[in-house]
Length: 80
Length: 385
Image 1 (tube, each protein chain N blue to C red):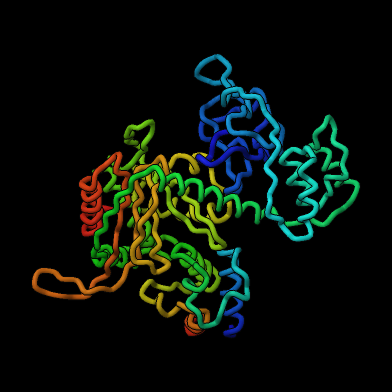
Image 2: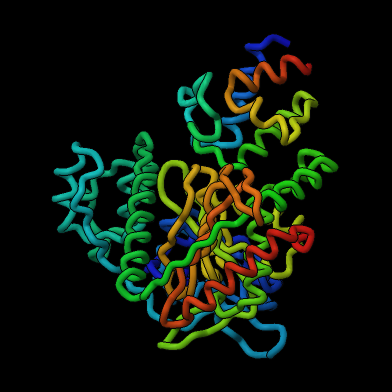
């Protein structure tokens, strides 16, 4: 899978979990939780949904590696 | 129509989920109503059989209006859901602020037209010029608007969302002004070393799949609930100049809506939930709050409020009590801080827990006792399971 495909899958998931967010609000290098006001519950839902799609589980210790769209895409790319 | 908040005057019955002759169980959802706070599911108070639905769908009902007759199972007599009160169709207040400039002129003209609130809303949504309608019996009602709409296909407007947001803002303003005017607040705060609790969660979550993970906020709420069991004086109401302690613990969880506004639905019977159940119901409650599908009991039963702005990086939260409740517990962000223990100084995960209490009901001593118990539980997280 290409990185762009992973990115759009992540964006799709964010929009599904938080339908009140507009796609153009999601920036590549902004902290997902802070910039989009995603709370810890919604963030967990995003990771759960990504896990269902890609089969990759993000342990809590790795949360700092999935803090932005770019980082999260890289994280999944390395593990797929 | 039950009151779903001190600020609510009326709501629109959108849909009946039962029909006449149906058996209903206590707590069953029987109808959906639309309020300024979104769609709320109305639960029935007791077991019985629906004898008669007194209100048609899409009717605006004042608080106190009977909605249905339920024949109670226990007693063989008819019982109404609520006391009878004539339904008055009140002339709604005219909004002075135009929704969009183009409509400003029209709204001014509207002031002379008698129209039911729901009909006005529908007319606005569909851009029907109500000044051109001849009222039936002196009043324009929904059916009339609908019949016009059937004749002319008009594009839909989405202004109702904005109306909803405005009225939520107003509802918050009313409750908070009343709180600040009436309740003599006292404020306490304490720093809690969260390292033991977070380490405990880390170990616990390692064994679990991502779906079963427990978030720190669930552990914190569980801690607050257990501390309330030991210091029940903060859980309840100030009503008729006296202090009422509630045995049941239904904490209202402050949930911010991303596009503005705030709701504090109750996490019902939190006192009877273990850590897993607390996490599950919290997750469910947050989704339903943001999706606009709460139950009537969740809107009305709160016995205390818990507000957690930690996700936004705020260090301490000094809350405004939601009357007639007695206290607000504030949980701040968990931040790395220098922490002295004995002779050693180290870095620990530290959280500021605050309490705003109603001084008419309790004194600082009770609040201090509560924060101390909360701290005790968080230092011994295995007790929170």
